Length: 467
Ligand code: AMP
Image 1 (cartoon, rainbow, N blue to C red):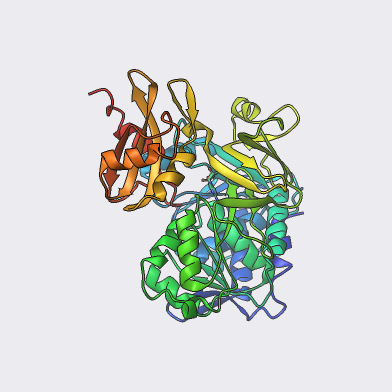
Image 2 (cartoon, rainbow, N blue to C red):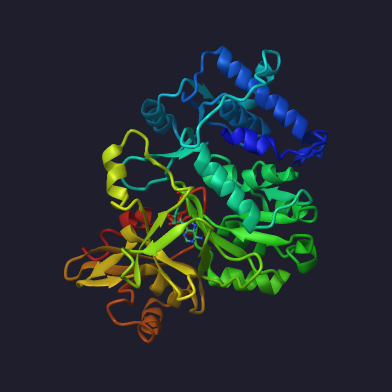
């Protein structure tokens, strides 16, 4: 069971049909993708790459990267994508840890050379549990860990998403996400390949290019910042979004205000889903059924999800299921710490469930603030602040405080009066939850997937209560 065969088995019978629709008006067909993958696999095998060997890639986004990805799978090797923003020193760590046999940094040139060499037509057989990809988590504390995803993990998730989101060969996916992360690489790409449908392929997000691409797309996947940037452009109108049957968001929390504004502007309710490198997608709002702002919906079929050990209302989300990874690369102890004795993975996200099973996330366990001995969930405070006039978005963190251990600090994107805003928050929240200080900023620091980097905020404001 090699994931490559599952995907290629769904390519359109007519291989001249387009897979990539490029910005310059040109296209790359499914046949060309398949040829590229066969030659990449041929070159890898000729270079001595064996099943299970890692092949690393760090490059700007291009269709050739996808030829490399598929060729690596086809050759039975393990694909290791690296964030194109990583520095040399960071890359050295990954290369040292994963020990890839080959490291590709210029996929277009590498594939061109491969095209003049041998093809590998017979896909190398792999078992369900065999490693397909190693994804280093964007971990903000400690060493970045390589999540080991198998052919079975990726196949199960791809099939579940393809069904849940109603993909058909008639779809056109707008793909503006990076492809070094599970969102762009597995979630988006696999849905398109399993449908044999074309992708409007953008090398990176640009509001103008996305708006132009929407007119010929039926599905868009993005991170929340894509949606806020689209909303900032007056050219986003109902007519512009009309051809799109579903807008999907994930990788970071979608603000209820973004959901509401997007609906007001386009008439469309963004479908939010929740996932992580270690399990790809875990929950999703329904395609048919109510999509609720602030909720990440229901577990995908086959996913067992519980809150804490199952007795708490709010606690760490634990999951078990066919897409959950087998562990961290060469870190057996870390892996053992993150799984319960009955096989549930501790996601590190804190959440709760409604009686009907709908899931709500209140943040990362490590972002929990303990102030004066009381637990403060940043999300609860952020939701109150985000509703106040002048606030675009807020991020609440705990920093060292001489009396309370940690003091609650709100970093607010927007403008206002600190004392008035604290008073407004106090009128809605218990005193210990209300921010003791509010700092106003133009932008919150975010990583490539649009996640607010709370670790940077904690560092930046570490001295706020000490001076
Ligand atoms: P990564 O492994 O880099 O994809 O990061 C996964 C983390 O992103 C999860 O553990 C969550 O904390 C966060 N995340 C992903 N999707 C959502 C979502 N829809 N809402 C809130 N947090 C999310």
